[in-house]
Length: 501
Image (tube, rainbow, N blue to C red; front, side, top):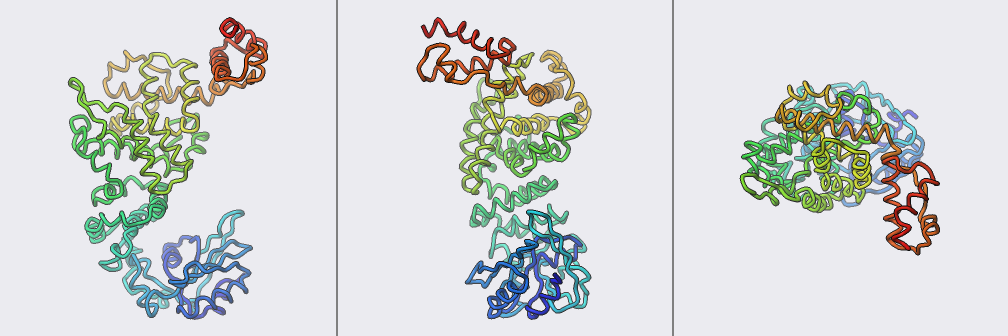
């Protein structure tokens, strides 16, 4: 399919606009093609083009005149949109950023490179654009060369406050910087972000958090007030526990954790050389992990209490999970993602509790993974970020090679103060990964007896006691007391025979 020729033939009055032009100048592929043309032409052009490209066509927005085509063979998406304003010039001047206020006539010389991947949307790239045909009303091409994000006009953010988040997302995805004027305007308009629909906010945050440059942009969001406008409960962290965390309080700690989590997700091989490939599959959704870190201590201000000479946060993890659930509901997270994030938050002190013992038993590890289920491994990565946030980069670099060593004693850890405590906690995490990946039968023992077999062996009716018996049998397997069906039957008769009689 010669797509460029087809567009010239059937929509000659259209213009390539927005992201597809921006990405072409950056020499990057796009996920779709955006075309702008007179409103009176959109429907007819869409239907004619769909027929010749063998594409499905449907109206997306009757008010704004938007039609979408999706080719059946290549799965290429083409959006045809009416000029927003009386003509192309008005349309471009109303766009968000200068590098999106670019257009290129469909009739001008161009080549279109199309890449198709099975089961995925096609990728498209405009090639050999000629500068003399490029329509650039705001100096967007120059801003692209300078890798700057500038607003097209002063009311850009008031017209659609979500553009504030989009600016930071573009900065992270394209390695751009926001201009000082853009940052000033965001600081002025930050409070307007609450007007944006939750699902749109989630989409932008997800794209931002999935990049390896989320932290640097989150810091800028915090400085402009956008982060706390999005998450007002984070504002309460700013002055909480400054005596413990220093200036910035719990919020400083939260952002330090975010930085560590981002580093970890990009450097799993350095942190866990033996298990990084298996962990990579678990940690594919980086945005979800970073959101969990951002909210993990959300309840500390609400639970802060001085006891004796210490500041404590009793049950902040459980209350935090409840508060996070409401925030995530407002952002329209799926039930599964909401449950996973809140499961991580609710139990993020569990490894610390295990670390208070000199020995991590198989029974303790089994109960840990049993209780946390799917949230267990993600939560261990959250805890790594939490523990390592208390030490410097230099200290982390020094102790990281020792994090997979044999678990040091609590007494030994105390001798090196904060660094020793952190290293011991890191060794606890490594030990839990080792037990999970290297001794799966002790983490998820195979079921030797089912409920019916237990009821028959002990002559019992169906009741909650059956579940209790099966659980004790699983623990006995983990500890090596039970190895097969015969020893399993002997175990339950010995432990429960007299009680049930």
